[in-house]
Every structure is written in structure tokens, then in C-alpha cells.
Length: 149
Image (cartoon, rainbow, N blue to C red; front, top):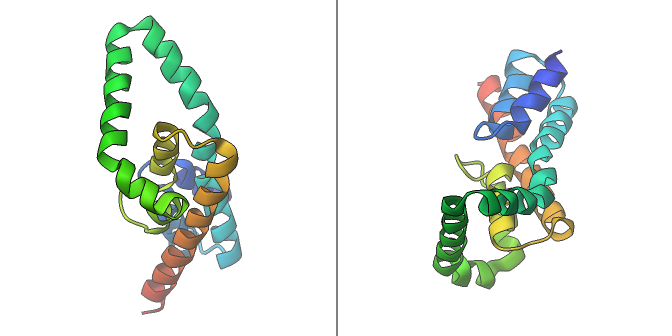
């Protein structure tokens, strides 16, 4: 049951592995390898939703005209505002966006960024996975450092 809790916390938006690893190590006392694996696996769940975001937004846009206007505005605004910096760093930007374990910079947000910028799953998945692994290392080190003090 503890393992499932860690996996689900890692899969949840906002908290993601930044909460799952401290939960696994500090509260449940799971071994590092297990905390790491469960957190990374759980945190990658939202990335698998990427192919369905287009289907859902398209269906909602066809059904509700205000959502069609909203999605059009959102994509245009976001692309216009961030296109230059995103194009400059391209793949590195997506990895870095996930790797820095700050609020609103995890796999959920990266999946939305990939969707807005039209990055297909086959390209986004390994980039986000690399960022998640880096973030998991950072969070693990911080958690282990805090629990050993």
C-alpha cells in the first residue's frame, strides 16, 4: 500500500516526485532505489496523456465555441511569447524545465508545453524522462541530506 501511495503522489499534479520521494524515504522508510523507481514511474504517467490532449481539446473546441476561442488564444499567446527562447534551447529547454524541482515545473507542465509546441510523444517522452530522472536525483539528495542532519 505504501508503494501505491508513493506512485500516486508522484503521478499527481503539483506535488509530483517532489513530494513522493520525501514521503517514500522520510515517512515510509522505503529503500532509495524503490523510492526513486516508484517516483519516476509515477511521474511519467501524465506524459502518456500527451496524445490524448489534442483529441480532447479538439472535441471540446467543436462542442463549445468559447473553448475553441480560448484554445486558439492560449496556443497563439504562448507560442508567441515563448517561441524564441524555446527555439533557442529546443530539447534542452524541455529537459531543464522538468529537471529543476520547483513548483509548476514538473512532468505535468512539460506535457502541456510539449502539447502547445506540437512536440510528438516519441520525442517528448525521452526528454521529459531525462528531466524527471535529474529532478529525482536532486530531490533524493536533498531529502537524504535533510533526513541525515
